[in-house]
Length: 141
Image (cartoon, one colour):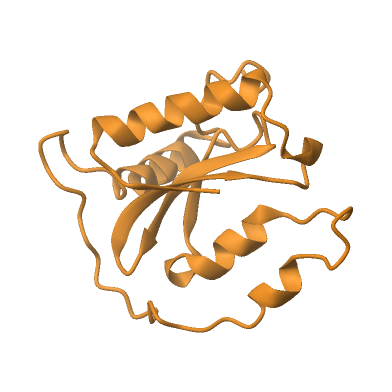
């Protein structure tokens, strides 16, 4: 199923599946008519992170992993990625900024030069449908 993109999340066993489901549901409202929950966050939204300056290589021919950037910009570095092993040249998942839920869609130059091919386009489109269904904002790069 990893190759066809039919599974959004893969678990090791039943207990792991339940934990991952709980984590996912923490990012979604009870229905499409409700707003996403806002969680009080102790991570300063105006923080300055100088480590971000070292992630991008000086040489434009070199690649970097966008996951590293996501770790630095999201609340407490928390990110719940969907379809992690499918079309890894694009990253989709949920995070929080200042306690508010957002979806992240980002190209990942480390994988296939972040070329948008059919599988990554499919992954992108399906994730945007989830965000739209729950009126969740998205951040794209």
